[in-house]
Length: 167
Image 1 (tube, rainbow, N blue to C red):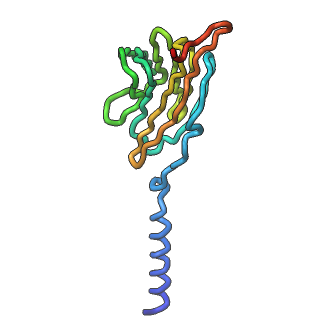
Image 2: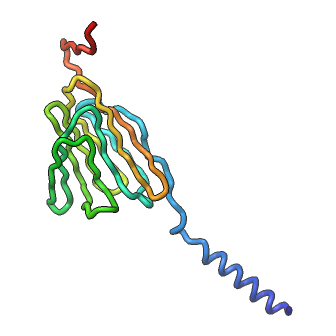
Image 3: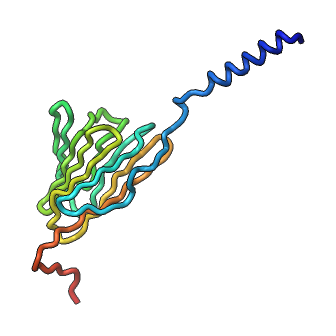
Protein backbone atom coordinates (compact mmCIF):
# COMPACT_ATOMS: atom_id res chain seq x y z
CA UNK A 1 0.00 0.00 0.00
CA UNK A 2 1.34 3.40 -0.81
CA UNK A 3 1.61 6.38 1.53
CA UNK A 4 -1.23 8.23 -0.14
CA UNK A 5 -3.64 5.35 0.52
CA UNK A 6 -2.57 5.13 4.18
CA UNK A 7 -3.14 8.87 4.67
CA UNK A 8 -6.57 8.61 3.06
CA UNK A 9 -7.47 5.61 5.23
CA UNK A 10 -6.27 7.43 8.36
CA UNK A 11 -8.35 10.52 7.49
CA UNK A 12 -11.41 8.37 6.78
CA UNK A 13 -11.11 6.59 10.18
CA UNK A 14 -10.68 9.93 11.99
CA UNK A 15 -13.72 11.37 10.22
CA UNK A 16 -15.82 8.35 11.21
CA UNK A 17 -14.71 8.61 14.84
CA UNK A 18 -15.54 12.32 15.10
CA UNK A 19 -18.84 11.95 13.26
CA UNK A 20 -19.82 9.05 15.49
CA UNK A 21 -19.57 11.15 18.66
CA UNK A 22 -23.11 12.51 18.90
CA UNK A 23 -24.44 14.53 21.87
CA UNK A 24 -27.88 12.92 21.48
CA UNK A 25 -26.57 9.65 22.88
CA UNK A 26 -25.45 11.21 26.17
CA UNK A 27 -28.06 11.38 28.94
CA UNK A 28 -28.24 14.09 31.60
CA UNK A 29 -28.51 11.65 34.50
CA UNK A 30 -28.33 14.24 37.26
CA UNK A 31 -30.13 13.52 40.52
CA UNK A 32 -33.05 15.72 41.64
CA UNK A 33 -32.01 18.90 43.48
CA UNK A 34 -33.55 17.54 46.71
CA UNK A 35 -34.76 14.08 47.57
CA UNK A 36 -36.13 14.33 51.13
CA UNK A 37 -37.41 17.51 52.78
CA UNK A 38 -40.13 19.06 54.98
CA UNK A 39 -42.50 21.90 54.17
CA UNK A 40 -44.08 23.97 56.94
CA UNK A 41 -47.64 25.29 56.60
CA UNK A 42 -47.55 28.42 54.47
CA UNK A 43 -44.15 27.44 53.08
CA UNK A 44 -42.94 26.21 49.73
CA UNK A 45 -40.07 24.29 48.19
CA UNK A 46 -38.89 24.11 44.58
CA UNK A 47 -37.22 20.99 43.24
CA UNK A 48 -35.58 20.47 39.88
CA UNK A 49 -34.98 17.23 38.00
CA UNK A 50 -33.73 16.04 34.64
CA UNK A 51 -36.27 15.74 31.82
CA UNK A 52 -34.06 13.72 29.43
CA UNK A 53 -35.94 10.50 28.59
CA UNK A 54 -38.58 11.28 31.26
CA UNK A 55 -41.58 8.97 30.78
CA UNK A 56 -43.95 10.01 33.59
CA UNK A 57 -44.31 12.15 36.72
CA UNK A 58 -46.71 11.04 39.45
CA UNK A 59 -47.65 12.96 42.61
CA UNK A 60 -48.56 10.85 45.67
CA UNK A 61 -49.85 11.87 49.11
CA UNK A 62 -50.42 9.46 51.99
CA UNK A 63 -53.01 9.04 54.73
CA UNK A 64 -56.04 10.69 53.14
CA UNK A 65 -57.91 10.95 49.86
CA UNK A 66 -57.86 14.25 48.01
CA UNK A 67 -59.75 16.04 45.27
CA UNK A 68 -57.12 16.87 42.63
CA UNK A 69 -57.79 19.83 40.34
CA UNK A 70 -55.49 20.21 37.34
CA UNK A 71 -54.87 23.36 35.31
CA UNK A 72 -53.16 23.49 31.89
CA UNK A 73 -51.88 26.37 29.77
CA UNK A 74 -54.88 26.38 27.44
CA UNK A 75 -57.47 27.07 30.21
CA UNK A 76 -58.08 23.34 30.49
CA UNK A 77 -58.98 22.19 34.00
CA UNK A 78 -60.31 18.99 35.43
CA UNK A 79 -61.06 17.59 38.91
CA UNK A 80 -60.44 14.02 40.03
CA UNK A 81 -62.21 13.04 43.26
CA UNK A 82 -61.08 10.82 46.16
CA UNK A 83 -57.58 9.88 45.04
CA UNK A 84 -54.25 9.65 46.82
CA UNK A 85 -52.17 10.11 43.65
CA UNK A 86 -52.24 11.75 40.23
CA UNK A 87 -50.06 11.75 37.11
CA UNK A 88 -49.06 15.23 35.98
CA UNK A 89 -47.13 13.93 32.98
CA UNK A 90 -47.38 10.63 31.16
CA UNK A 91 -45.97 9.86 27.70
CA UNK A 92 -48.43 6.98 27.27
CA UNK A 93 -51.47 9.29 27.36
CA UNK A 94 -52.58 12.51 25.72
CA UNK A 95 -52.21 14.38 29.01
CA UNK A 96 -51.49 18.07 28.32
CA UNK A 97 -48.73 19.99 30.07
CA UNK A 98 -50.15 20.71 33.54
CA UNK A 99 -48.75 23.89 35.01
CA UNK A 100 -50.69 23.75 38.29
CA UNK A 101 -52.32 21.03 40.40
CA UNK A 102 -54.17 21.42 43.71
CA UNK A 103 -54.82 18.56 46.13
CA UNK A 104 -57.55 19.44 48.61
CA UNK A 105 -59.65 17.79 51.30
CA UNK A 106 -61.33 19.06 54.48
CA UNK A 107 -58.02 19.38 56.37
CA UNK A 108 -55.18 19.63 53.84
CA UNK A 109 -54.56 21.91 50.89
CA UNK A 110 -51.38 21.65 48.81
CA UNK A 111 -50.46 23.14 45.45
CA UNK A 112 -47.94 21.92 42.88
CA UNK A 113 -46.80 24.51 40.33
CA UNK A 114 -44.77 23.56 37.25
CA UNK A 115 -43.88 26.73 35.36
CA UNK A 116 -41.43 24.91 33.10
CA UNK A 117 -40.46 21.30 32.56
CA UNK A 118 -37.99 20.00 35.12
CA UNK A 119 -38.96 22.43 37.91
CA UNK A 120 -41.77 21.78 40.38
CA UNK A 121 -42.75 24.07 43.25
CA UNK A 122 -44.70 22.58 46.19
CA UNK A 123 -46.75 24.96 48.37
CA UNK A 124 -48.41 23.80 51.58
CA UNK A 125 -51.43 26.07 51.93
CA UNK A 126 -52.72 24.34 55.06
CA UNK A 127 -52.59 21.12 57.10
CA UNK A 128 -55.00 21.01 60.05
CA UNK A 129 -55.23 17.20 60.02
CA UNK A 130 -53.18 16.90 63.24
CA UNK A 131 -50.60 14.70 61.53
CA UNK A 132 -47.69 15.13 59.16
CA UNK A 133 -48.53 14.00 55.63
CA UNK A 134 -45.85 12.21 53.66
CA UNK A 135 -45.71 12.44 49.92
CA UNK A 136 -43.52 11.75 46.95
CA UNK A 137 -42.94 12.73 43.37
CA UNK A 138 -42.31 9.56 41.39
CA UNK A 139 -40.14 10.14 38.31
CA UNK A 140 -40.06 7.33 35.76
CA UNK A 141 -37.43 7.50 33.03
CA UNK A 142 -36.98 5.08 30.15
CA UNK A 143 -33.91 3.67 31.94
CA UNK A 144 -34.64 4.13 35.71
CA UNK A 145 -37.15 5.21 38.37
CA UNK A 146 -36.49 7.66 41.21
CA UNK A 147 -38.53 9.42 43.90
CA UNK A 148 -38.44 12.77 45.62
CA UNK A 149 -39.90 12.38 49.12
CA UNK A 150 -41.36 15.19 51.19
CA UNK A 151 -43.33 15.75 54.40
CA UNK A 152 -46.16 18.28 54.76
CA UNK A 153 -45.92 19.39 58.39
CA UNK A 154 -49.04 19.77 60.51
CA UNK A 155 -50.02 23.19 61.76
CA UNK A 156 -49.23 23.76 65.41
CA UNK A 157 -51.71 26.00 67.17
CA UNK A 158 -50.66 27.79 70.32
CA UNK A 159 -52.40 26.31 73.35
CA UNK A 160 -53.78 23.35 71.39
CA UNK A 161 -53.08 19.76 72.36
CA UNK A 162 -52.80 16.91 69.90
CA UNK A 163 -53.66 13.46 71.26
CA UNK A 164 -51.38 10.89 69.67
CA UNK A 165 -52.49 7.81 71.63
CA UNK A 166 -54.70 6.64 74.46
CA UNK A 167 -53.48 4.24 77.16
